[in-house]
Length: 611
Image (cartoon, rainbow, N blue to C red; front, side, top):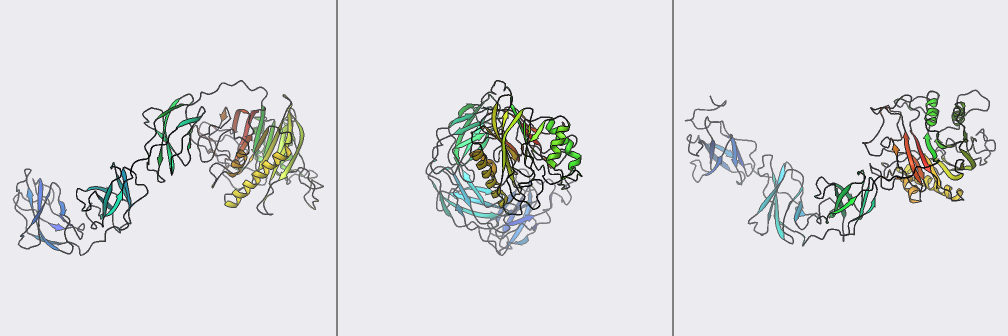
């Protein structure tokens, strides 16, 4: 038995009719199958007597048609079945009538070559046609479009043809297509387009300028009028499985590499949309540096930064607890590292709910709880307010007491000696904003007798343009304070919650201010980069991939292995060795925080070697 609807082999195909795919230039037919038929032949004529016919053979299936026909024209159509040798299996069926549609959409307009056209590629763009599912570009080197070649475009209104000779003029037309690939429109009028005379040479002078254990930085000579460059890097000389860096400058940095490993690089000029303008330069070889074997740092200074979250802050975050239920976890976090000097933020100077005379602040509570477990921490400044009577803000008569709201500096009096200290109010967007400060202290490391200038800042919060601008102003005020107060030009450690990260738009303003004026980020956690830069100074890093802000979420926010997390909490230094850095977070093997989460920020901790 044949398929459903099949007829005896001696009978012509039945059910012949035009389908919805018929357009103004194309007649598309369908019919029922014939048992044993290998193909079919359609006969078309504009005459009822089928005179002056034309034909279309259909190799398989039960649909087919004929294109390039005039619009609004009635045709008479017959069909017969064929054998595998192309001979008649049946006679022709009775004729049916079918008519091309009255009109068709106009051809695409706006056809032109774009700036991406190169010496071997003609890239065209055009305006869309309603109902078009695709387009067909016709190219020829002759005005009469003889000997053409074609490129079908499945979607969109741009496309082109490559592998062409340089400095050659082409004539180009375009038409719109239906979903079956038939003509929706006629071809447009021809436009001319010319490939470039010759490809410019690739950029010369490719070489490495920085070779750290995990980073290679390359530079090359500028190419005339280059929109941008693409640097390719591979671990094989044939440049297979390469990774790519796009840059507007003549420097490219590739991060996240393996130490003491050879790599291969080449560079080319590309257009603004990423198409090649030049070939790639010759391949150069570069090897990452081995991990250096450095002498052990004797008597390192340990420093930290910790936003402990204000006692009155309760925002309903996932695992958030009030200060009274998490302060012991804050103390234990500090004791787990016992930093010699620690900058804290949000240790509120306003009073806790505590009955003792004179009131009791969060920073006093933290100091006393550290003391109760034998940690000999002192505050560089215990004043609550910059008033003659610093205990109370009411009826304040201003006097600079060095008070800095909740931005405080704790130092371990067993390992450090306080020389002098102070604070500076930072700029604000309006008088109603929360007061922000930089607290500073000059201290001596007792084990070495070396002095260091330590500063702690808490910058404005917010994601809008105003907040970004005010953070930059505050960062500059921090640097101005350091420069004016660090009269002995001591090594500097600056810590704090800067409320700005490498993903902040439009830029990580405070980071740019600090690093442009001589401070170093030990993590090399630069703008818009997952991996640390070759300028990173931290020799061992723990929990690098974990974000510094945790939002009291049980599952730690973190990037992929080897990448740097998102940090708004920082430790900056002047040039010095940083043998150890830790983003302090108790996390299990599944990436969950263990126990009470001390704060919505992780403490940042580092051991540094004072020069």
